[in-house]
Every structure is written in C-alpha cells, then in structure tokens.
Amino acid sequence: MILSYDFHLHSCLSPCGDDDAYPTIMAGMAKAAGADASALTDHNASRNCRAFLAACEAYELIGLTGMEMTTSEEVHVLCLLPSLEAAAELEKYVRERQMDIRNKPDIFGWQFVTDENDVVISEEKRLLITAASISVSATPDLLASLGGIAIPAHIDRSSFSLLSNLGAFDRDMGFPTVELSTAADPKALVKAYPALSGVPFIVDSDAHRPGDIPDITHTLESDGTKPEDIIRALREGSGLERL
Ligand SMILES: [Zn+2]
Ligand SMILES: [Zn+2]
Image 1 (cartoon, rainbow, N blue to C red):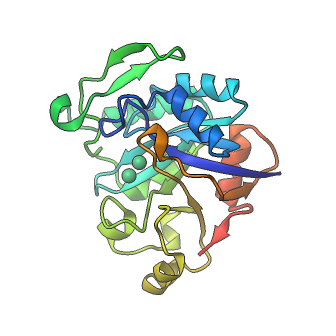
Image 2: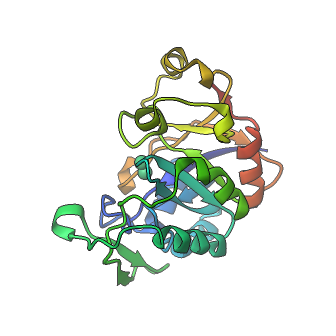
Image 3: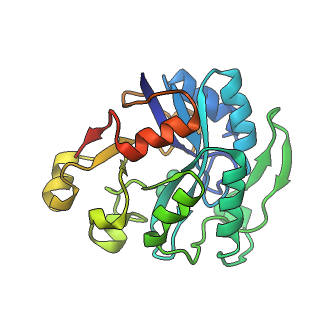
C-alpha cells in the first residue's frame, strides 16, 4: 500500500517546540495535513510519544516512536522506533551519554511532558538539545539493535547536518535512507555530493508548531500498517524517491 508520511515532528518537550505543540495536537495536525503515518521526534527525548501514540490511534494514523538525536559531531539523526519500550531504551542510552546541563526556559524554552489529555505531567529540567557522546557512525547499528532505523536528518541544511558537519556522504556509513528538508533541491545536492546519487530519501516537515505541517505529498510503499512494516520499508527504500 502507498502511505503518505511525516516522520519528523516536535512537541512541547523540545525546548524549541511551541508550548502549544502538545503531542496530541501534532498528531491531529499531521492527520489533517494528509499523513497516513507519522512519528514524534523530540530532541534526544521520547517521553511525549505515549500521548502521541494515543492520539494517533484516535485519529487512525500509523504512529511511530522516535527522537532526533544530537551526535557527538552535532549531527542530527532522525531515530525511528517500533515501540514505546524501544524508544525508552534509546532515551536512557542517550541520557547516560549527555552532559547534565540545566535548561533555562527563558532562553531555550520550556520542556513539558504531557499526557493524552494535554495535562502537563512534568517539566524536564535537563537541557535536551545538548550533544550525546555517540558518534554518528554508531547510530545505524544502535538503532538496528532496537528494531529501529537511523536516518541523517535534513542533510541539505547548513547546520546540524551530516553534510554540513562531516562534509561528505558515503554509503559505507550504513544509512540506507536520508532525510531532506522541504526546502531542499535534490538535483543540486547530488551535483555537490555525487555519492548521494540513487540514495532513497524522505522529506519531512520538522514542524515545531501545530501550524507548521504543510500538506503532505511524499509517500512510501509498505507491506502493512504496523510500525515494523514502515521501518522495513524505510530500510529497503520501498516506494521512496531517490536522489
Ligand atoms: Zn534537526
Ligand atoms: Zn527537528
């Protein structure tokens, strides 16, 4: 089946996410934008995924858990996972490898964990956007060990991306798929980095506010509607556009 998607959404747990970006509302807005499948990917944290999945079920949206990891090279890697348990395990792993710096809400923004009724359960005191001591090269195997997939995020951007921070793409890095921002020019990207030629890509909104999700036009092909099916399709590049 052909499924439209947006696998890169933030919520009020991300310091840069809007305080009104409840995970439930982000799920609803993804559905309204035309998504069949979506994922919540807050910075280095997955605790709002429980409320997100509850809303996905209510909206009949295929929901994946995840996070946007900041590696030691300050590269953002989209991490998609099949379950809350796997996401919690990854969050624990990342947290143990992150510096314990206090968040300053007036500078960075609030970090709220909320439930399926949009009630604030807790405020995350540790600043979530700091890098973890995990190399970008370790993320494909790390995610595979949890049944998930690591996808270099918004590789066309001039900061916090694989290309901006490492200066190259190589298939031997082990990433079967890459993510482009909605502003990317795929042809220009391949011209600048010929090694990307033929690599499957996804395009996500990276929305930080409920109103930031554009109408969804990108699709993949999946055998089924379980998160595992979606992750397999992303690993195989099934039905994805190619650079
Ligand atoms: Zn990012
Ligand atoms: Zn993001």
